[in-house]
Length: 135
Image (tube, rainbow, N blue to C red; front, side, top):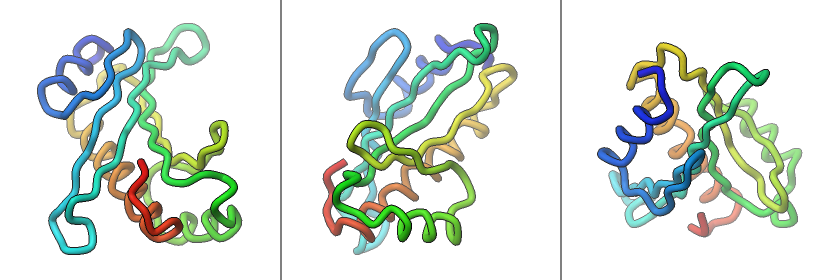
């Protein structure tokens, strides 16, 4: 899979799409494997980004808290100890977990594994730092 359109087609087929724009698609990832996550969900934004005006990348991002609701140093310390994939950024008024991948020669497992890790990790961070299920 090396094209944005191929990735979008796969996402439409495999996930619950809640918004679909030319360079961005949003999905809802639901959880419920164990009592702590049952009924919870995470909205994930998957966006096409062009790096250096020549290379297509895909960015996976999901908010998990508002900046004014959390201690950012505590969040960053926790993420530094526990996460394998992604990084924390502030986007507007939200704290967001995101990860980026080049589209060139991207295999499905190179997309689905990070997507699931980002969504699941953000869900746990949201639960830990806000106690709610807002995103």
